[in-house]
Length: 155
Image (cartoon, rainbow, N blue to C red; front, side):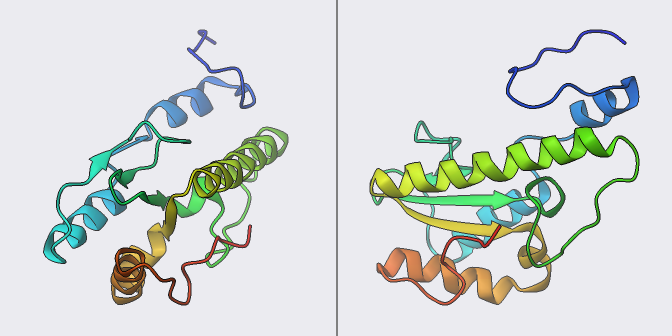
């Protein structure tokens, strides 16, 4: 197996197929992120910044208003709504990987909130199945109050 460039925080994949699979996944500009950005423009909220220099580098940020939008993929971030199964092969690796992702997400959320940011966590499944709920939560963040579902996810 060829060496991969790693940040040394998450577990090391055990086989080449896992490495290839991981490298093929986008970190930014995913389908749900693009859809949320389209919603933001349609709702009259242009002017966002991508991967802003704030704790955790939120997917979408409005630095002046201190609003951070995290668009989480259901598989990688372990969506509590989808309750997706664990991959069958290499379970030890995946358990460590998902635990790291969830812990990192929690730390990012806490760091942003401690810094005074309003954080909206949007799951990929919500973008597809509940776009009106997503719009409502975004609007609530801009109006300065929280709506149902805008609280931190229950990992």
